[in-house]
Length: 439
Image 1 (cartoon, rainbow, N blue to C red):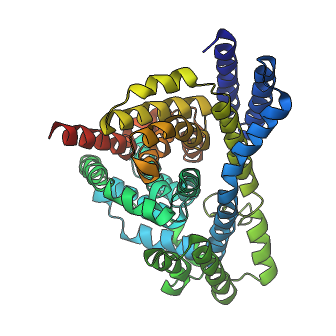
Image 2 (image 1 turned 90 degrees about the horizontal axis):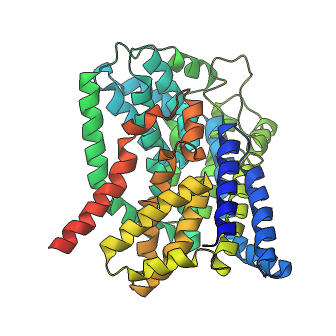
Image 3 (image 1 turned 120 degrees about the vertical axis):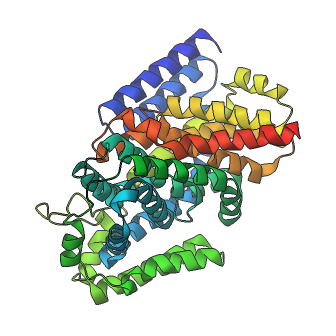
């Protein structure tokens, strides 16, 4: 790579890190990065019209997931208005015992993230509640935050509601339910080890108490009964029988609207506003910072990031900007080396891109030719992306995948050593490939 490109990448990287550290919307520096690379590559001899066409073709890869992203936004808001999310938090907090507080928190956030398919939504609801309990119970907040964030990204890989899972399926041209099946198969050892570690930590640092007023406030604000969990049951049931996810999410949305109108004190107009702008309570409400989320308009920010990052990916791919790196990957001869290369490139991509989306897109574009060369197929690529880029991103301190949840939970990067599931997953899978090779 020539010196001008190295300087450009370094400058863009510093811009992204600065923007993320200052809390600026990542879409702004990403847009600036797109313009910078258009100018730089134009000066290197590529016609501007050609570069724009490259960006356009790259962004087309995101079109299939945009509808899913908007559906996730409105379904998330509808689930809160229906009382589904509050009920999950309410029942979940009821069963947590002080002696098993940390491991219970990990299991609970993992289950909620599996239902919601959003790490930020999981952290902002049950994660926030667990952190309130941790702070009042003498539990190390970094330890609890690590368990919460690890659990929140559990569903990011294997939930049919996850925008990350849909992005990988779109990029690799695979079926999401088949991907989920494969990811479950590579998940069990890491999940078991992480659960055992959190159990040990729970026994050595038990909570003094888990009694809080959160469940009481939830019961005052929402009608809580088993029936309001119907939208979550619907999405899980339809996922089991592999109903197309757009249809299953639409049915869940309709079910949630029905629950909201029947059981909760919200009118049809209220629900339409929630779907558009996201669910919020009055600013003075005790649950205002806990029970809130998504909506159609807020998802525009995610869509912008996805579109710009795939446009950048299109330029990187067609200009062969990483040709030297791609050439070095041609020496890969087996699955173990391929997975290791995917893991290392995902770390680079997530560190440079400062977002999980860019990490996924860049990694996929850089390693895809090698999967084809070794005849591993798109499903193998999708599985490996789920076991690397998705879980690596939250472990990069300046990546918004970890920075935003940490800010929501009022902690800093000290949570990372305790997010054990996130680094056990790629390490266990790397070890499995090495063991298979040795046999």
